[in-house]
Length: 98
Image (cartoon, rainbow, N blue to C red; front, top):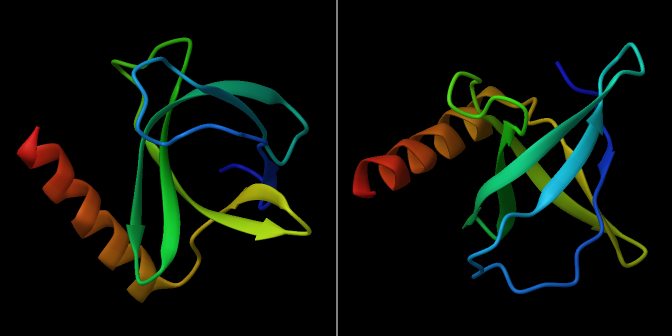
């Protein structure tokens, strides 16, 4: 599992064709690069779906909530079961549509 705070600066439009990367640090301090697969919103909150850049076809995706503090965006784990189930359902619908 990744650490709770994942800092990610981006000044770009979420509707994009090129890949964006983000580096997350796990609880052991190990960095791992992820590719941003998609962004979506639910209940006025923004979420990002990531897959490991080194092996995206075999790695499971990671869904994190995007939060902002003092003008800086960062990623946090979704710890609430109700929120997680809702977000997972939205993501599964997005995948089914594509």
